[in-house]
Image (cartoon, rainbow, N blue to C red; front, side, top):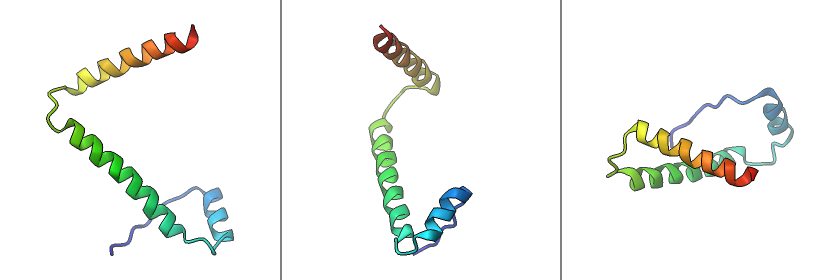
Length: 73
């Protein structure tokens, strides 16, 4: 299995070092798998899309605009 090196903030490193009873690499591996599954699903859902990046940004803006109005009012 390949290895990875991660950079983490000092505070996180301090906490991890204080709790060596926890299998931190397993926690990181599971979190990465969860994110990878989401990315794969997104790739599958969009593989035949004809939307351009500009189309996506436009729709994103419109959806956020409507949500802001809905939540504000």
